[in-house]
Amino acid sequence: QGGGRHDMDNNGFCASERGFTLIEMMVVIVLMAVMLGLALPSFNGLVERYRVEAMAKALMASIADARAEAARRGVKVTMQQRTGCQGRDWSCGWETLVGSGDAAEFLKRQDPDGRVSIEKGAAGAMSFDPMGYSTGGGRFRLRPADSADSSKIVAVCLSLGGRMRLVKADGACS
Image 1 (cartoon, one colour):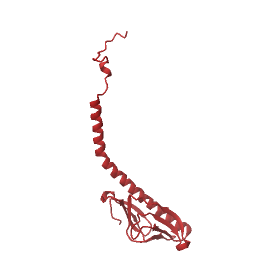
Image 2 (cartoon, rainbow, N blue to C red):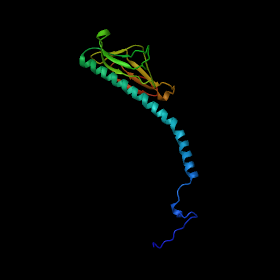
Image 3 (spheres, helix red, strand yellow):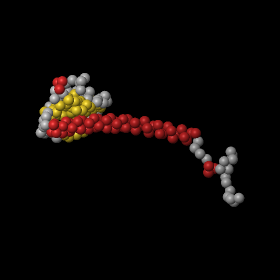
Image 4 (tube, one colour):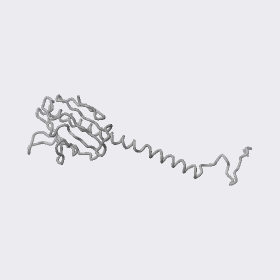
């Protein structure tokens, strides 16, 4: 039946139905582990870069929201670092508010990402008037908290007129 002849090995299996040997499978697993070991450091760098860029975009969104709110309400809107940060450090996150003191109304709070370090060019808060002009703005520098690699640094540049730019690899704000 079938008329064809099948070559059999010593165990009674057809020669064409053989699978992988244990040694072949172990060689493939070792090769995959080596390739993964080589690729993992570059993948971590990519994740760090995206994390920094995500915080930069969150900062830019907060600035745009503060400017729009100042124009909408016709009053000064302020962005300041959250409690726990001092000087030029904004790594604790930031708050957007209208008014000051006990009468301040909080519009938005940005939670920190402990894996990203944020430094403002000049210490203190920044604010936007109803025409969209900023005071105390300038430059924010963001980088992975545990890395000094300048290729992962991102800068958010803010002009006095409120124009924002995202500059990668620690470029200059001009």
